[in-house]
Length: 328
Image (cartoon, rainbow, N blue to C red; front, side, top):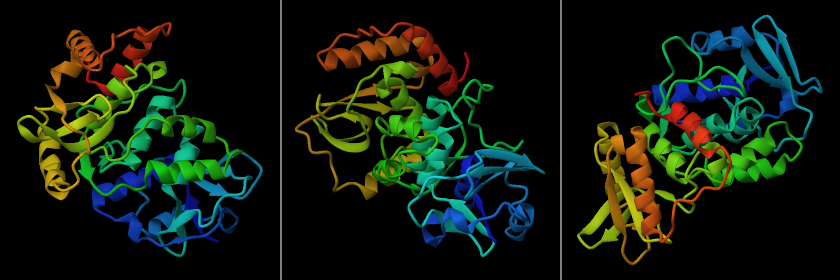
């Protein structure tokens, strides 16, 4: 019987595809969890040249009631709920990988909310963070060790693996699955189409919910050409209901891909009368005082004041910043 990569091993597989330029949308979808086994995992990986790509232990999904079992470098995750079919991409006759929508729910049982949001942005975005040389994905579990900051991570450009809408639809279809509540919580505020880890960090800091340390500026959308007094202008983040946008001006890794998107989307301009675009630089995010000033300016343009009543928000913000930004 074939094996099906799941949880962090599926995530690693998708990141590796980004680095190798593999278009997963061309892989056939096939199989149900009942078709898969936890036997001969390493042989199946070896056949596809993936044995060095995945960190140990390797996570696989099977049809069982047992939640987790560890044996010989393999973690077997039992799935007892009914899943929509097909549930996986077919890599070969012996190897399958959980669909991105399923992987997102599975990781909801393991990752912190911030790291799950980063995973979702990556799956629904145009990039894949490059796997570190020491192997393994960099997603911290609840209460686990700290991960590397997202800002400045090297990445490969690729097509989105899924969309927020598809992931929502899948999550609604598996209400009793372990991790689905966390996944649905994250999917309520992430956006499609992030083009880099830097852009993901920007939107989480400004538009992320206050409970994770964001500023809670809701209604943001990403990567739009907008009409301004000076003509068309690119905005990394737009709040169309307020007629304001934000452009990061000094990130070279984003600039090349941004220009390509500008060409592709020239005819799909955001439908607002006129947008005032703030120009920001990296220091406006990495320096806390400058970030506070930027947040006040955005709030003022929205006709608001920065008032966050959530107790302990500053501490939550510090935790979020440590995950997203390089330490000074």
